[in-house]
Image 1: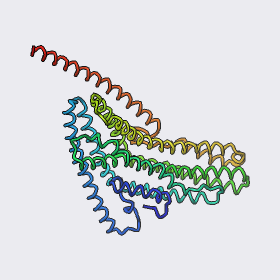
Image 2: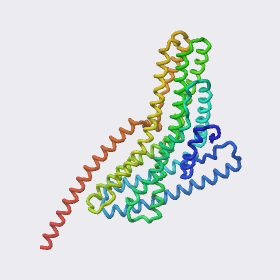
Image 3: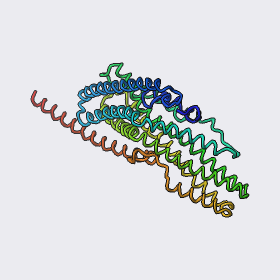
Amino acid sequence: MEANRSRLLAAARPYLQIYSIFGLTPPTQFFTRTLHKRRRGFFILGYACFLISISLIVIYECYANIVALQKDIHQFHAEDFSNVMGNTQKVLVVAMFVWNQLNILLNFRRLARIYDDIADLEIELNKASDGFVGQRHWWSLRFRLALSVGLWIVLLVGLTPRFTLVALGPYLHWTNKVLTEIILIMLQFKCTEYCVFVLLIYELILRGRHILQQIGVELEGNQSRDSVQELCVALKRNQLLAGRIWGLVNEVSLYFTLSLTLLFLYNELSILHIVNWALIKSVNPNECCQYMRIGTCLLLSINIFLSCLYSEFCIQAYNSIPRVLHQMNCLPAAEDYPILKMGLREYSLQMEHLKLIFTCGGLFDINLKFFGGMVVTLFGYVIILVQFKIQFFAQTNFMQNINSTEMKAYTA
């Protein structure tokens, strides 16, 4: 962990420590260069045992929830596809936790490279910003992380048990309910972990764009050949840093590919499962969990929305760089010095070819367009589910009426 030489990583370190406690990412101490090799080996062995124990607890709790679900299904005579949806949901939970442990093992070096790249990019951007006036102050990064991620973590921890505890049903022991709530919170924390890395990348992009804007300001006031040559060197350095940020985005996307794919699939399936049980229990006049189910659906949806929103912020900030280059290309200095015009053209061509995309292995892109499509798809499945349930209830009532009529005729 390069927190000692990186303010960005130092600001994100408290959140990474929280994720390591829940077994979502390796502790930051594993990446420090000052840690003794033997001590690091003991720490890794102990953390591996901790991860295995978490996986075993998750498997047991999923089994307990499946048993409780079967009792609920038998009680409400909902042996249609409620059984399939519930069991698939539990299997996804186990798959997510098992893959998360494998991801820590397989992509440990990739995560170390991501930390190193963030620290190196911050250092290079700080060096590139030397000599420019009008520097921005970046002290508020901790506040922005607390507002964007920390506040949402607090809401997840506080609202998830409030909305889901009663819906777990009467067939689970209270210890199973507590562990299930912790597991549900851990699942959603993976999305906030992704948001932390996206916000760090967003900060790097903002710094690079600010330096580019300062280069444009210097070009407006300085027309001497020596100053223009120095600014051309600064422009080339900024271009190389933009390419490295693009590579960092690819590394982060690869690291979170399967984890986010499973999480998004789990959240969407959970929303359908919640709607299904809301329809099943709607005939019960004493049902008290309907509004809580709405809150659970909102939590699952907002978690996906925040990851898409922060990714969209990064994409928009990155896509604004060509506009800055176009403004610089319209300056008189660009016409007077061919080397500057050639550098601007090369930078523009790089931005056209290196499109910033947050993707999950090419399956889908993480942006607001994806979130809108996901919402439309969910509404479509909900409509199909409602139509199916209406037909099922009508057939059930018809059969009950026939049975009651036959019983009356038999008794008469």
